[in-house]
Structure formats: C-alpha cells, structure tokens
Figure (cartoon, helix red, strand yellow):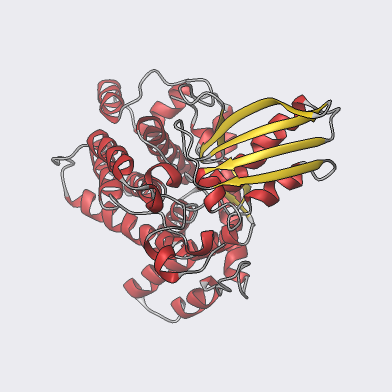
Length: 399
C-alpha cells in the first residue's frame, strides 16, 4: 500500500482525475520528447464526456503551450482498464508514433499499467482488520501505524497540507461572485459564514461547518489551490471538519496533523481495495471516502478508541453507498459543492454516534469497502462522471 502523501496532493482544481491527472500525464509525455513540436492526445470515456467542464483540454494545452497540440474526444470509447483513459502521440517524419496510453485513476494519480500501483508500496498491511490487530497487539493508535512505516518527512508534509487546507478555507470565506462555467453558480460560503455568526450554540456550529466546506469546494471549483482529500471534488469535507473541531475545541496543530495521518490511511485503504475515482465507482468513491476520512479523524480527536475510529469510518462510507457522480454540465459544482457540506456534517454525526458505542458493530470497514467497489462496478457508465445520467441528464446543460 502506497504512502498517504498520494492521497493528499497539493494542486489546483477543479478535478484531480480530469485536471490534475491529465496535466501530470502531459508533463510526463512531453518530457520524453523535448525536441519535438507537434503532439496529439486522445481522451476516452469519462475524460472525454466531461472534459470540457473539468478543463481537461485546458490542462493539457497549458503543458504544451509552446508546442502544437491536438485534442481528440472519444466519449463513447471506454478503455477496458479504466474509464479515464488517454493516449498521447508525437508527430515524427509525417506520421503519428511513440504512442503512450495511460489512465488518470483518481486523486491526481496517473498510471500506464493499471495492474501496478502508481507509487511503491511502503505498508506491509493493506486491510483495516490487519491494521487494527497490529495497533491492538502493539498498544498503538492508528496514526502511530502511519508513523511506523512512513518516512519522517511525512509530518512536515502534513504540516504543509494543513496550512494549504486552512488557507483554502480562509480565501473561500472572503470570496464572492459567480464560479466559472455556464451554470453561473454563485459562491455561498461568505454569506453562510456571515449568517452563521448570528446564530447560537448548535445551529451556529452546524452552520459554520457548512460554510467551511463550501469555502474549500468553491475554491476548488474556481481553480484555486486545494488539497485532494481524497480528490478535488471531495476536497472540502476533511479540512472543514478538522478546522471546525480545532476552532471550537481548541485543539493544537499537532493533534490535528495526527488526525490527518489517520484520515490519510483511511483514504489509502479505500484507494487500494476499491477506488476513489468518480469515473470508476461514482461519487460514493469520492465524497463517501472523504466522509469516512473525516469521520475517523474527528473520532480520534474526540478521544475515540481504534475500534470507534474504525466504526465511524465505516459509517462514512456505508451511508454514501450508491451515490452517483452526475455533475451538471460536467462542472465540479452541482451537486458536488453541496455534497461536501452535508458530508462534513455527517462526519460529525458519525463521530458522535461512534463515541456513544463501544466500537462493536456488524459491518466492518473492510466489508463496506468491498461493497462500495462492487456497487460501483454495477453502476452504468452514465452515472459515473459522464454527465449523461441522473441530475446532469434531467437538467439538460452540456459542458
């Protein structure tokens, strides 16, 4: 299982799989042919279906801005390895050659062999049951399992991640106006934050977490700097929950960063054993995973046991099973932004529910992860980031 650094990627929105991934792939390919000036990329499946709304062509063209680049769209062609496929070619001596096919598998990761991980494995265990047993046998917390196998640099990296997350919230709370795209969707974080400050007690706290989640998600939709957690489309859940708990419970950055480590491990487990790609399993793999990550982190910060943390994470994923990815006009705006706000609120509810229990429950995190993967496999393509079904279909706008 790979490093949690791969779950927390710092970059610009609006989409980790449709913007960050293709940009990274273009940079990798261009680096192999620096002496050539004419290139072509063919986008397949979900990348082609919602690529314009997700700025996929812009991301690729930006890399090749000093060269000639042709972008071809094949929305009806789904490569068997992954729905986010792309093929790069270079024009040499009158013909297209040096073909390279790769896949944007979610969270900004790119692989050219879907049977192998994008990065080396550093963890000897890859299921929650195994990790819980290790923690119990060694008297450790889940974040200490991360510390055991990650390099020491992971803590400074998580410090940077936390700073970027907080900055996205702060920028988003100040920003106003409409987001880019044909929807003309208005930013809401600033007004929600202003109204929330006038409420009292429970209503104030719940409204604040909405505002924090909206702030990050709107920054992402506007192309601002965010952290994938685990993706761009679900980037508002984890930071809003952690920021909310730090603000109201006076938590130190050290404790928050340890909670981030636990959240990162949860996301990595889902990525390893299922998927975090909306194009592969729907929004349950994005917002569902983000909610599981935030639920686990919040429970740890509340003093939960390793078993209560696992229970909270399981609920985060279970209660999003079957959630489709159906962005209107192919934009990471509707229903994506609002889903982040409600997933953040759910995460806090999962924390409370788990803390009332002794940690025992019927459905394990590992089982719900497998269920999510199977559910995603069974979903038709039109419900997996193609903007052909669900809300996108009935709204009628095309990106």
